[in-house]
Length: 251
Image 1 (tube, rainbow, N blue to C red):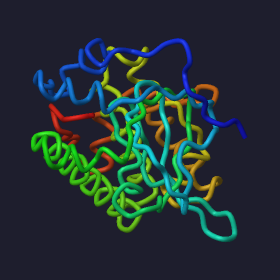
Image 2: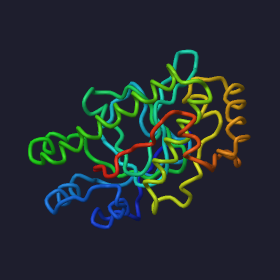
Image 3: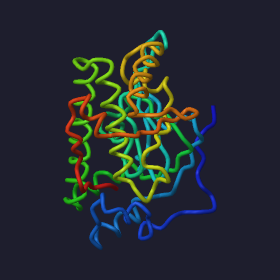
Image 4: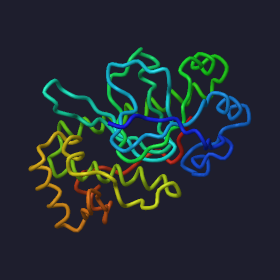
């Protein structure tokens, strides 16, 4: 498995960060931006399929995704995997390790990934001197809790068809909010295996379920990717109102 490697030749200035150009993310004030410039120590390039953070291991860093996709997951002893959530540009990973000492889940690159690297040791300074950024971290944690609540509802109570429809609608809406950072906001870089491990279904059951959505002209599968054709139709099947925050913070 490839290991993450620090970018040696190119570092994007925080002042020129492409994420700041997206209206979905709140703007930093001058004092916040100066702190973030110092807080950031570099960038990390992660190959597709490589592990950024490992469950049970301590990490000296936090990361904000600059480009690409990853997912958070946990493994049972027999190798069965549960994907907990997906990570996209602007998302913060590693906060759990900063607060609990070690990671309780693994973060793996779903596509080639670039992340901004922050020193965990400076978190105390952020909390003490930058109340607005500390509030942002609380907001990010609360948002993750809300997402996991909805995912748990899907796994626990939605039918297989409703689960699949919700997941694809949710991911499509997240990608849509990143318009400008992604080339295709309707194409999701996930395989049926990823969907199965997210929904808690067998691969055979997942294949049959996704075929139903494809027959309804709601999605189309393309070589290890999924194209969402009708997000409103997916939301109707899932019983999900398709509401995600219009503006959100990031580090």
